[in-house]
Image (cartoon, rainbow, N blue to C red; front, side):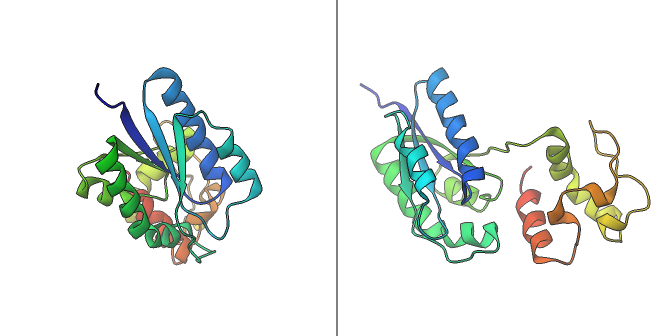
Length: 193
């Protein structure tokens, strides 16, 4: 008998990234006959709340903690430092399951290259509202067309499918284009094509 298709999910560190992917995993399990492994990067030890959420998952959803990364400020470097451990876990899954996909959260786009290297279909799961999604998809164009800080734009930003929004009301990571936050956010989100 052929093995069930297997999907690996990679959230960014933190409960706010884990919970949407866990809920997505439950939906996949409910509507399709998949086996799922949540591969969880950590900054320090997993919290009690995180462990409780993972212990309550259905039996067809496994989880694996990657070794902790010690970069507490930015998610992108933490995710990048987790790539060797992620590669090991994915290689094991490829060898022992019928791994068909890797689904990453918005700050895990470096992992897409690992999936492609292992011939696993890569996907990005972006659980957000329409405004932030439109902003992410149009950020490269916005970055090319303005020369000032986004918060200092004299006219509202016009994003497809959204009402115009003042630059100072855009999400914090893109307010200061010279900040490390902006560079990481821009690099990660620029891969979402």
